[in-house]
Image (cartoon, rainbow over all chains, first blue to last red; front, side):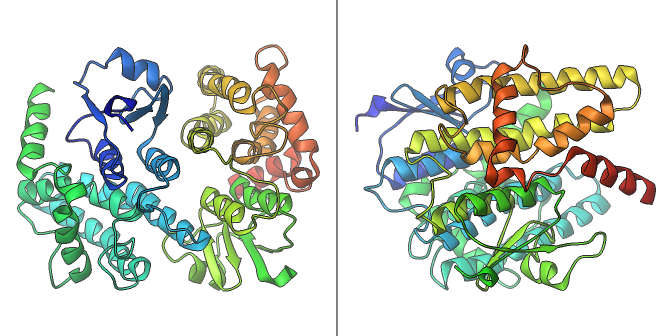
Length: 224
Length: 224
């Protein structure tokens, strides 16, 4: 697989683009990262994702694939030589898909809500909502991972990628809101998992530093 | 496969539950349909889907699976003897997942918006939005199905189930809003496809009659 065969259109602070990079790293696939600059969108992006016009897009050869979790599943199916991202058992697969969808549909909106909360009362309510959405993931880690290091067991899997891609943002929101969201007492499983995930070679160069995200959010707010 | 091994928790007018039934029919799997009555929810539903507490849920043996498209993918993986629902090629799989997600995230909200639109102006705008969301599916049918009868080619596949499950609702909205949403001129591909889909044995006993949905919506409105 030569480098130019796979292109990823994204930004380095976009968790959805980060998912694609982590999945490609897991499979030891070289890729070219094409940084999009907003608000303008590249011709290649508009051509590759005419329906949604959004990142990430992965182009494999001439073929564009859109939507981060769909791309991750594609990567798992297209490079079967590397470690499996989704479990092979259909029920375990369904469970992994369920929790990845939960991360996007139920959990991430609460982290984003906390980021935007203004005033102590709103912040308190947002933290409560975040914790309510987080706790099922603490249970899911134990069940999916069967007590091992990751949702995927011994190695990073589908739910690890889905949730782990938000860890830079989680650290950024912790800084911005001056709050600790993963702690050893309330969520001991996720606390240890997060440390392990960001230490993994395939993820650590991809997950952005919290400060980078904080700066990016501040710059965006200023531009509006 | 004995009947009691597979249970589907849903309602007969719920398109998401209908997806599960059609997928099971395609695989010739017998199932027991357990009708939920709202607003109360059965103990079995609450126990089987504690996170979202919503239908459909499929219980296979003792194992509950939630979220309609995740269930359909599970069925495809668990009963590999029957016809394939998802294509085997990873890129075709990604394309099918893309359009199924499009149906849920972009297209269905416009049909539901049209259902709720009040007054001629709002109705006109809603029809326009619906048509804008529909046209990409006309193209997708030609591309995914490669000119054959269904998105899945010669047989009903993943996108057929995702979109086809809404055909009863589409017919109901056509009646309620007194408008023709699929016609031979604007969307000749989808017009023919819809006729073929609802005629297929695996779908025709599942897709509810438009009048049944109209009555259900009227009863719901009255109850509120």
